[in-house]
Image: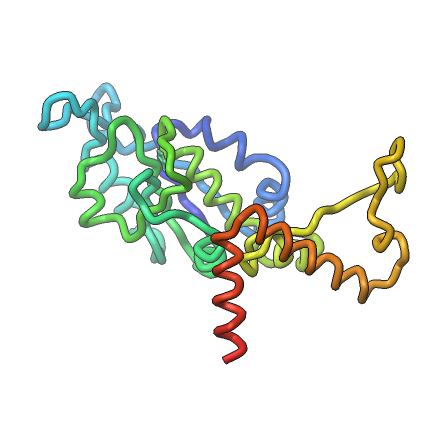
Length: 235
Ligand code: ADE
């Protein structure tokens, strides 16, 4: 898989996409992530990529030419499945969307900035608009890092024990069960007895019950989804 990210702040992405699982996946060539500085595509001698909005008080807006040049340059090299734009008014990102995107071959992520981008970019060049939550970030870079991280960890081989990505919270609309490590008794704070018994079948049942209970209490919205979808698979 290849992910091209277009941004005015490459340094904001290099950190989060240069460590841990994502770094290892890049080193193992499971994913190629290329970060492009939008200013490199500006024809302006000051490398300007924004301009005043037509309406008063709207702040600076990203202009079409550098964005179009960057996207066209990438598209001349290979075919892309999606051109994603990160924006608080996009579709809310979730695990299902991460799963879906992890099955694509080539993605472009365009990071929004300032007060937004000229709307014609969204109408003519972008194929998917994604928000990572109902709050406003300074720019789309952190959102692009979140989206990329959630996709990469799903790619085969990115996590040594493949089942661990599949058993993540949200994979089946359930939160993960709690986990524990040694010591079994820390000044009276005890690990649940069942985990010490070694009966894998009972432990799996306990973990599932814990997942159900935590989801019902902490995320009733997800719990309803879980019930609806398990009913659908039964019918
Ligand atoms: N840019 C600014 N805020 C954002 C958000 N919540 N999600 C995606 N991109 C953003």
